Length: 290
Ligand code: SIN
Ligand code: FE
Image 1 (cartoon, protein in one colour):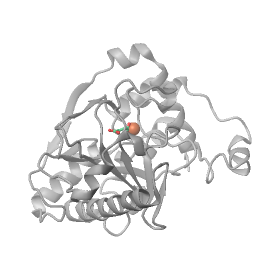
Image 2 (image 1 turned 180 degrees about the vertical axis):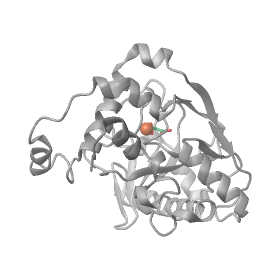
Image 3 (image 1 turned 90 degrees about the vertical axis):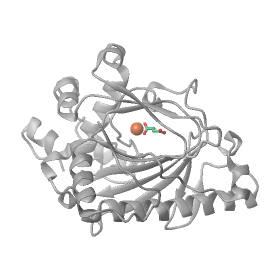
């Protein structure tokens, strides 16, 4: 489940062998774990390590590195600028890491949102759909990915040495076999309506529909949450990991202060496209989903 990679710089360099092994492990659903790769905060940024900066309505502070815009934060103008600087630097580092360990993706991957997660996960209250302490595969209700992969880089920046404790669940194929038969088909015209009402930012494809249904059904199933095949894994502070969160079933149980960068990758950009959730779902359902 965990593929450990040595190294303490974002640009590597990594050997061809390391790159090949990392690509295969990642596409199979393993987590690429860099135990000694940390993100250095500037001394004035240490003051940003407080849950106080998060808008209570959103669990994360978001950053759009193209438009240099911070969302979901509260604080003075100066503090919000400082948050943006930190997130922008992280976005650059995370991109450099993906390019150096996964050069195969260089031509096709695209940088999406960056986030800062300053809230303690344990004990946080939310609806079950938003509760990341429940095993799930990632799917975004308002941002359809239309078959693209969701690749995420995380770094634990906890200053007190607190770990970020995750659970990792069963292989995607098993999740599909278990949950797809329980999932509903979309209502006729619903995808058109969601887009017209701006509930979704673009067309919710059948792929997005089924991924979201699986995400919700998994989270709603208490028995599954307790009994599914799973392991606990703790990411120490000052460590980094990369994972396909649309493929690898995961839950975040305990931890505070993490940075995260999301990338999208077209299925055609993968080394083995058959390992994508899109292709696995299409073959299970016997139809095209995008
Ligand atoms: C998640 O993607 O479910 C949350 C991961 C985290 O914040 O550690
Ligand atoms: Fe998730």
